[in-house]
Structure formats: C-alpha cells, structure tokens
Length: 416
Image 1 (tube, one colour):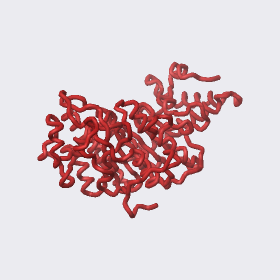
Image 2 (tube, helix red, strand yellow; image 1 turned 90 degrees about the horizontal axis):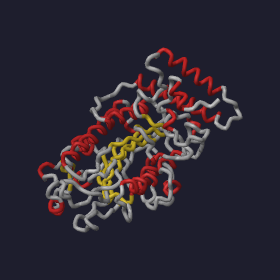
Image 3 (cartoon, one colour; image 1 turned 135 degrees about the vertical axis):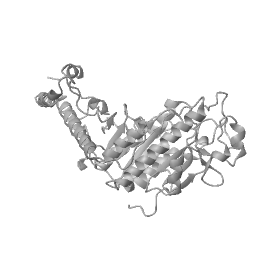
Image 4 (cartoon, one colour; image 1 turned 90 degrees about the vertical axis):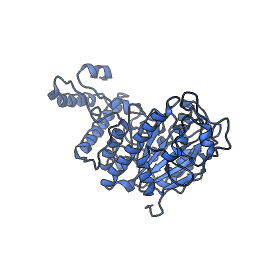
C-alpha cells in the first residue's frame, strides 16, 4: 500500500516539510551522495548568503574620493563625511559598522567588480547564470550541487547541504544529492494533530510500520522507506543539536539572523554541514533607495557579525568560510525615483578567520562606463574557483568546466 501525502494529512500526521527538501525524489540515495571522490578537508564548511535582488555596490563600497560618484547620483550618494573610510579612496556605507570591525581585524575580504561578459539585466536569468556557473545557461545543475556530488557519503554526515528557507537554492541542486531545507526548527519535524499531542509518537511509529510493510518488489518501496528514515534521522539530529546549543552571542531580531542561527546550531552540533545557505531579499532598490538600502546593509552586517562571533565562541570560526553574492549590481546613474535600476558588476564579500582581509580584483572605473553600467573586472567563476580550490581543495575545472584563476584570499597559516 502506498500512502499519499493527502492521506497522511487526513490521517493526522504529516512530514512537513520533510518531503519538500528532496532534490532528487525518485532516487534511492535519499540523504547522502554516493560518490567517493572527495578531496575536501573533513571539517570545512562554506556558508553562502544570497543578497537577492541586486545589491548597489557603489553605495556599499563607496568611492568617496571620486567626483564621478557624486556627479552621477546626486540624489542618492552617501555624503563623504558619513563614509567609514577603508583607505583614502573608498569606504563602507555608514550602516556597515560591524563589517568595519571585521575589516579592521583582518577578517573581511572584498572582491570588486565581479560579473561576466554580456551581462543579463534580468533577475531570473542572471541568478541562473550565477547559480549554475554558466553564462550561457546550458548547464542546469548548481555549481555547489556539483561539488556535493564529490563528497564521500560513507562519512555519514547528516546535513552535507543545508538551506534555511522555503525552497531549494538552485546553486545546491543536483539530481544525485539531496539537500535539506529547513524553514524553521518547529516545522522541521513530524507534525501531529494539536488536539491529540500524546498520539504523535504512536502515529509516527505506525506510519513507519506501514512503510516497512510495503512489498519489497514495489518500485517505490525503497524510496518511501529511505525517505522516512532520512527524515526522522535528520529531524532528530537537528532537534538534539538545538537542545544542546547555547548561543555565544545575542542574535539580532531579523530573519537573516534567525537563519544563520539555525546554521550555527548544525555546525556547532557537528552535523556534517559542508555547505549552508541563507537568503536575504529586498535588494531591488528602484525607488526610495537610501533608507531601504541602509536598513538592508545594517541587517546584513549585524547578522553576519553575530554569526561569526557565535562560531568563535564555539571554537568553530577556523572551520567556516562565509561568502555573499548578488545577481548583479545597480546602474551607476541614479533614477528620478531616488533609486537605481538593474546594473552589472557587484562586490562579493568573504568573511571569517581563514580570510586574509583586503581588496581583491580590480575596482571598476567610473570614468569608463558601458551604457551607464560598470565594466566587470573579475569573472564570478574566479570567485567560485577560489572557494573550490583554496577552501575545499577540489579541482575547480572538474566542476566549472575549465580552469579559472584564483584569488589569494586565505591566510598563509591556514591548515591544508
């Protein structure tokens, strides 16, 4: 007998969101990759923070000494006296106070002018280009999904890929690897009938028995059995990590901070997270940009600072690399609605104890624009190659399709 999701809901117990996290629902390898090709240092984690919508890099890393900046955006430029100087040319937006602290301690790197040739100004196409690491969008598989396929599934990691949110980030998509999606800790467990809370355990056991009783020659028997087992295992592991977890800091009250806290629980609980992902939206600032962008930058800065300090408090900061990305930057010239339209090149941040702070790549020239857009100077796949080769010790060409240069963003004393 095959139990449908509708029947489960009617029966008083559901797997929310257990079935939703399966990126390859018709495979028997429900939780782990089966490949044994890993060249990854065993305990390293990458945490990816997506700035969805297109971040305005010029009002993030502000060229306060360049008169072109103030001429081109008279209604949204950040006054020179408010900038947090990084050198005598550029500085942070005034709301990036916590980023400035990380910069001063040498734990933050800025890669400037990141983009690709013939840039798309479409959110969806540009996101796909970044997610699949393919400017022609011929590859329909995430670059990090391809990396996860190289991991050794025999390690028994509970969460090789862990995304906080409602949907699978496509950079983690692979037809061979299942990635867990957690919207919240309260939802990532079996959901019983609130009227009969004492019956949940019994119903869960009964459901397991029903699945175990499925004929072994049924084409879906292994699928259902492994799905239930993987779901129960991962949910129980995360709940146990939550009980044992004591945050080392007070996290800000924001959705981003809440998502990072979930990742911190899984990382400090040693659940085998190789790649974590969380998204902060709202960066599509066509109008009223100054207050909205300021709020977003403050939220990003404070949440990531708290996450990093929490990792330090648990002795995990040396094992985690944090990377941000956004699908494109904004038009150099501001618009009449006190905002900016879709643009091209964008800065990427790397944070963490393994990071050698400073500027990398080449700063775009405001005196040499292309249709009022920045000319990109650093291929985004150089950023990915840096992560794959420098952090995960995985050959980038096998995942990116060809060799790209890498950036020296890691501390010389970082263990190999």
